[in-house]
Amino acid sequence: MLAASESSTDILLSRPGMQRVPTDRLELFQLRDFLAPDLRAELIRLIDKNRRPSTIANANGDHYFRTSETCDLDPHELAVVELEGLLHGLNGIAPQFGEPVQGQRYAVGQEFKPHTDYFTPNTPDYDKFCTVAGQRSWTFMIYLNDVESGGGTRFKVINKTFQPEAGKLVCWNNRRPDGTVNPATLHHGMKVRKGTKFVITKWYREKPWGW
Image 1: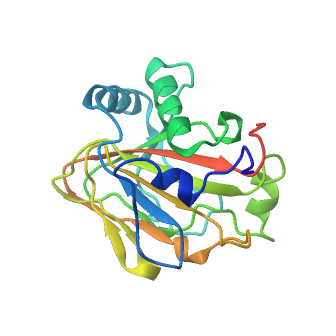
Image 2 (image 1 turned 45 degrees about the vertical axis):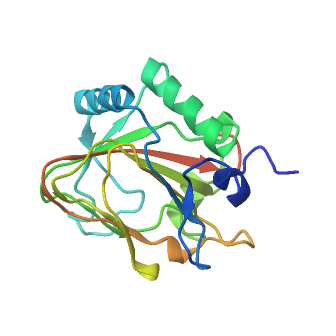
């Protein structure tokens, strides 16, 4: 029986339209038209209203490593409640294992250079961020709008790039089958060349979120 903190390939592929990227390096999926236009518009409004400069957990000296803006979305907002329900219906992960939903806004020239979502074991950021809820397990990312040019998400190891498309969900397991972190999940939020990109990011943990 699958743990309440987990999703699986079988669960995700049971959703009509879900596609798995054909690689044995990682579990990586996409689903088009996951969010309706009205919900996307409301989430964009909330992100625009409360955005702040994005940060990274472990500063690396590169002040241009992540240049987007981030919004910590209020879990009591009706749009966020609806989004959480849709995600739970898709992945089956019990809500208490999820981090609060974040939104990101990328203007022209902004990017998030190649990175992984997990916290690297045996580092200060791992000790700081994983003591309560454990390692990040799954990532679910949703594009909220079309982008005129640029802004793709490139998985460098497998040479796969997802282009921004309003309502499209991309998700992946940050671990290998044996439970260790998977470096093949390295991905790059590429520079927006024209327009503005809005995305939703939802991370899940191995243990209940307790911060």
